[in-house]
Image 1 (spheres, rainbow, N blue to C red):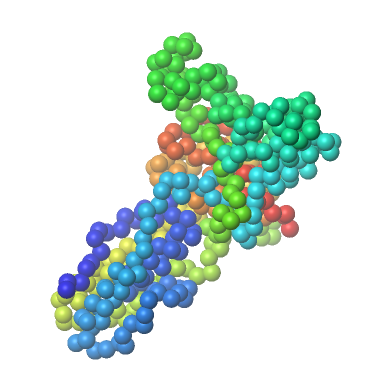
Image 2: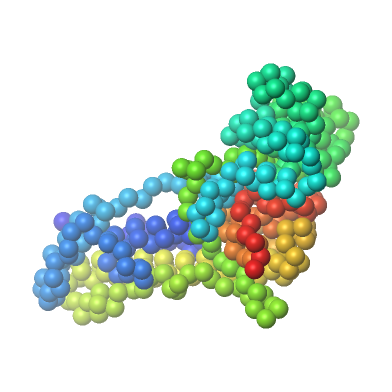
Length: 408
């Protein structure tokens, strides 16, 4: 049996899109199929105990055993775009549940509303579907609840002013229109979402331009703005049994009146290269063993380079956010200012597409809560197309993608 080597070199940017939990899983999986990789946190890596270390003459059989064990333990799974979406997984540093109803209730507590209105808004929120839409007519809800239609209509107007923007909409058109109103956008973008979503879905820019009597460039700019909206504002909240543990990737801490960037990891780097096998590589006279160990060493070194690149990106990105959003860290979400991803990507000398992929599923912890990195940019969700419209107005309410904590 010929010992197998890694099939291809690891691209240093390949690990950038992984979340903290996914990176940890990747390292554990890598350790199962590469004897040179040793995670810093002790984990049970083998299904059975490996043979005792022996002299070089016995090394080939032991490495073959390791290779066989690699195949038994390998459990890589493909990761879909939805799994990597930072707005598709919501939790807190402590793993506490966050629901749309509790999030809306906290916002209502900050407003001067009468008890009847608060109860009516809470009732409507409990009737929303998983996407955050109110699909049931107010007349039916009035009959089942006993709340007058007029009061429900007033409560719905209040709900439309809350975060996440677009919540409580009747359909996609209204959901997108509510978000455009929130960021002060009108003109072609608003006309398109209200009257021409069918043409937008068909990508018929010429027909839209003709219907609205505007230029093709105006239509395309409007489309870029629309693509950055969130069509499912309620999807960021999951049921209690679905909410995963959230591990922040980087932290901003206040020290003596100034802020510092910290990595929340207890140990860095997260794995080291086994020195015993490095010595075997140097001492072995068996070409097959040397070829196998040399390939595994290259794989381990590539992985170490990739996780280091990911850590460097996180620290640089957090530093850029801190520089631009310092008022936020002092005063909280109401002090958030417009910031475009493309501008920060340019500052970090990264292609915007790479920056967008690397920012997904990454979380920053601070005194105000645990936030996805994408929250600090001008749109409520990162554009999948890689296009960015004009900067939006900062949001006035807490973010939908974290559970804010009380500032100590």
